[in-house]
Amino acid sequence: MNDIKEILVLSNIGSETTGGNIGKTVAIILGSTAGVAFVVICLLFARGLMKKHDDY
Image (cartoon, rainbow, N blue to C red; front, side, top):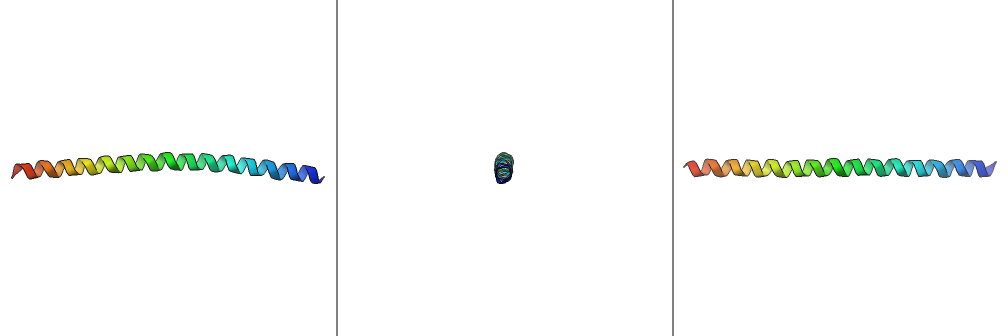
């Protein structure tokens, strides 16, 4: 009886770890995408400022 409980506990730990890894991977991908988008927007903004400055 104790062996069955131990197996169930171990299987739950494994599934939580896998779910946690998937969540971490998704968070890293989304964070990286947001970071790249932020840098691109900043560069476009800076480029726009330079064009306005050249007009004067």
